[in-house]
Image 1 (cartoon, rainbow, N blue to C red):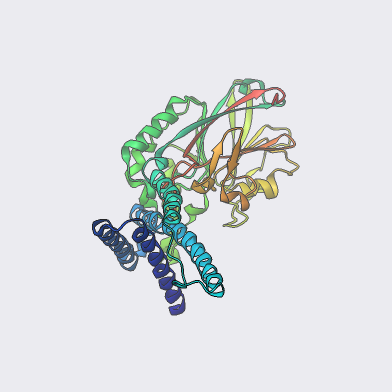
Image 2 (cartoon, rainbow, N blue to C red):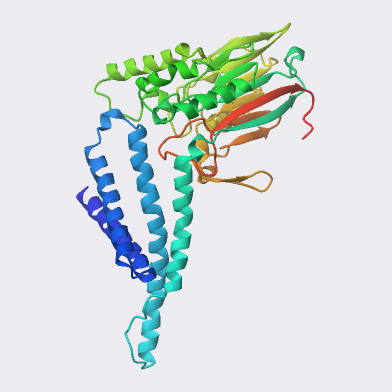
Length: 409
């Protein structure tokens, strides 16, 4: 453990030395150099003080998220500076060797080139400005994404039915009531027939949702109801509890939140949604993840559901669809998931590019995917976790319209 701390300290010192070299190369102003040193010291001191004194018994909350965000926005740009200047030092070293063999007079190492430091600073500004935007604007830049899906065997009365799908609330991360109220208004403006939530209502503790009960209770549906399932964070798995009893008490309280905000929580069970003379099966499994907790039981959840029934499945983790659902003989027409958050970081330009680091872990990570007429939609998440922001992958409210007929796309 001590060796790891030594390595970490050495890396930080190296990063700070190279970053200082950039500033010193670009300007000779003592005021600017002094201000840079003071700001760097204060920020690093705050981060160090926070993580040394932070009560881990609180779990991850808006204060710890801010500290993580400040760490990222401070360190990542400096890493860019370090990589570029380290590359220049390699060039200077070999240039010095060549100069020595050429018997040229002068210092062994050539002076740093000012234009290289300018380039380094310009490139470092990209992650700095992106992370700053993500923490101040991006995390609450809610987008309503609408999709129309066609199914030849959709019951007649459900033709034109709309579903609002949200996922990954992570209420313990929120720090702005006005923005969340605005998002709830956006949900209600859709006037969907059915509202579905696919898990992770908190980061860890049930109490995280206490300030937001009245807000989320305002979510409306136009007749067919509001239903939900659990996500991996709802089980309290990423926290050291004082006892199993304390953990179970928290878990029961989290399940109780859904009733408080007017959602029917489906725990490996299904309900029949009726409209006119038709019905469809809404199935909700507990969390089933290839990389996380597996308590979802599709067989139990589908008891009483016939193969010919039209089925909508709610399963938090899209790896469930990839591993089991898409090839299942029971033919689950539409699966709704979340979990990935789209990594809260990536590039999306419709029709051009869709990329995020999370795609190297999850085959289905954001948006709509299809296999043999079976669909999964992966919501990019309502809230945020770990990094307190979003860059390129915005918080999402999904609206899906069900249409009877063949897919024309």
